[in-house]
Image (cartoon, rainbow, N blue to C red; front, top):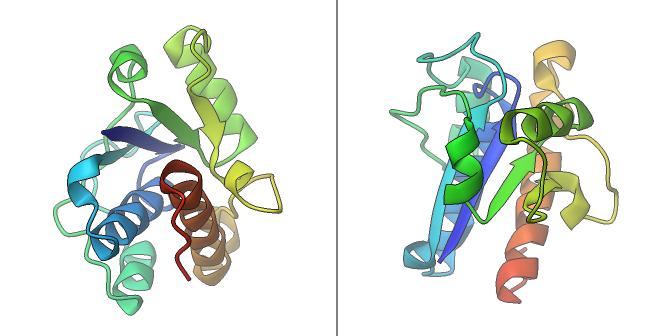
Length: 154
């Protein structure tokens, strides 16, 4: 089983989008039982809050439901429980290393590493551009799915 935790600053935009896109991809491949996918925040600011409405609308536009998801903060135990902990940007990755006490097993990654254009996932909290975030997240998740299963999804 692949256990993946997507992480961003607040767990209300980018990381829940990645969580539910990846769950959707696994379901489309009839592989849901082979994955445990979740998301979390590096900060405590949004704990308990639902997915931010524009992010929720972007997922819904693509037929993906994220009902019931609320923000939670990642913790050191997550490092032991998940195979991959995937940050949305460099600041997230630095915070993840701090929270996890390093990366002794090489589990910390950036989502865009799974694309032809490594770097940060566009942050819609500051840009308001949820389309750009959607493109980054969906491309990153498709790349990750291919890396983990060998299956390409268009």
